[in-house]
Length: 381
Image (tube, rainbow, N blue to C red; front, side):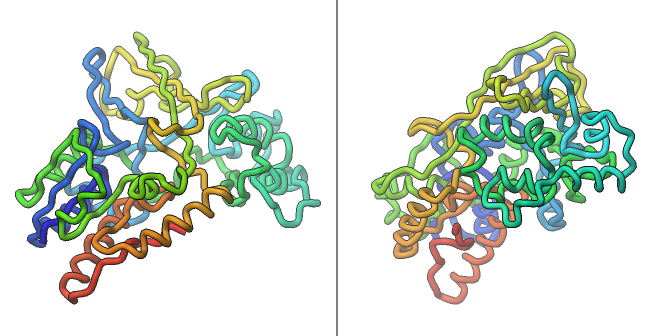
């Protein structure tokens, strides 16, 4: 069967590899001039630093099969994401943990004491938090919310936290110990040679043909037995009912001789600082040594038609529009929508790979049973 993967990111590469290994003829096209999508990495010619071109991507998962899969194509070095934040002229560690609490309040609490103290700050008059702000006030109180969440959230999402759903914030984003590892997952690491090298190896199969700097028009879908579309769901339909809302990022690059901030990620929680964070990319590969440094200030804003979409907004208006596009997509045949853009969801890399593995296997099963592949292997709603 002749199959087209639109997009050479994780979804297209992993699904395409499964199909190619099963004997299908797979063509992968991508409008960009590189593979790996938004996790594209490259060597900076000036410093030799491995740069994450579209912002940092740290791999973390509890899925053993996914972990084994990525290690099949690239050596992963141990890496722990330890984020810092600057707030009101001081530097703290995130997620909020026992060290953060003691530093912020000038205390020497033990875990049980800190837990009781934070509970005393909570706004218990909020029985059922209706939005992001109420969720924060209900469980961590005004002080921690104002210092670490309010300003950052306004910059990241471009709106008042009161209009964001409570589900964006974890139930209690506080640790009552000194663990400053940002993630809980048992498998965490960074690909030694970068994500682009890993994806290139996934695509390196005699049954896969890759064409970069190549745009695909959905009108040409009939030339293929099946199309997997990892582009924007609304883009398949020419945005004829309107565009789904996203936030995008602008990156302001600068270099430094030495070590600029001493960590990979420094958030800026104050609303009057225009950037959300500064990333120093040589710290994402601590097994390497570089005298020079490459850094980026990140600015979040509304995504325009010519911008790269990063974060789906998924508020009420977007969900209503999404439902209309999903209904139309399900009426199609010969196309399956995959990945974060194709299903309009924010997906971590491990979840993207898991869904790509499952999608590829579902397609093979559908072929073997002589039934059509659905438009969505994973429902986007």
